Length: 252
Image: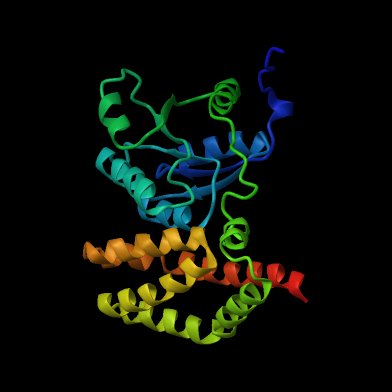
């Protein structure tokens, strides 16, 4: 069966991060995307865009690499490096440089594709067809219940492990907040490393990956980058507790 191309009616709401420091360009692009029933989160700078990319999942990121190019490239590279939830999504350069002279440099930054402005709705539809949205039904769950059940066969032990972990939530959150707020690299490292063992036993793969990322940044003396991941780490920790609470109800 021949695959039918996407038209306006086929487009399901998508969440796009739009990074553009020119307010007129931002307004025009945002209006067009919203007209297509796409949720748009607007950002005026690379620093602000990175915060959005770390905290929230997006279908695609539109960025004007020339803001200037070194800032646009740095932002793209930082998103690829620091945003675990958006590191593999399409990042599209919205370019006014139509001669292609800087394309090699742009793609080295981690840009997926280029669309020239001003663009029209049909060009966006073609772009969405080229990069269909991936299913994320279980991809970003913090707790890997299948791995947990495969590793532990004793229901009593599983219940006890979860119970002990959840009983320490308040003290753990206090410890995590105090460590990050201290801005002390060693303090943060010790606290996060302490938590890593618990996440490993729980098979909490998602937050375990984030934990290792923070530890690696601290080892490389990138304290400021590690601090950017504080809110995401706490959100995932709280999500893990919520998921464990739901999962543990099966033992009641």
